[in-house]
Length: 133
Ligand SMILES: [Zn+2]
Image (cartoon, rainbow, N blue to C red):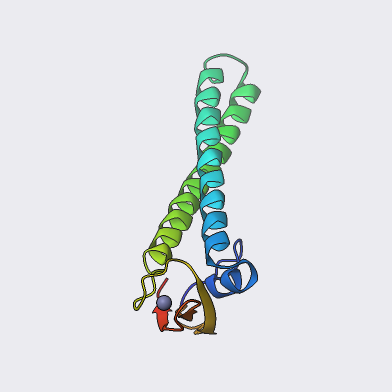
């Protein structure tokens, strides 16, 4: 069973609501926003290391807490970035119609929620095929 992603809508829901190309574009924008967050967390990590050299014990404890929070958020953001990017690219590699090679012009026919596979149909020639996330 495919793990449900609660932060982004499912592949089938996304294609139904905005179409494949917009879904793909939004997944890429979301993934790159997470990359930016990971970069900002890296800067925060370096800043907390810089601040750790001076200050009182209380300030050093605050620095340690901020370091841990920045590290945790940064790792989460990096993981989300890689997941969203690889998921979008994996699906995009399958978005060519097997019959007429039209790219990204497809409609959702059926979704298998257990496996995450989505049966789609080409808008140009009507050929059905399955997208495997
Ligand atoms: Zn086609």
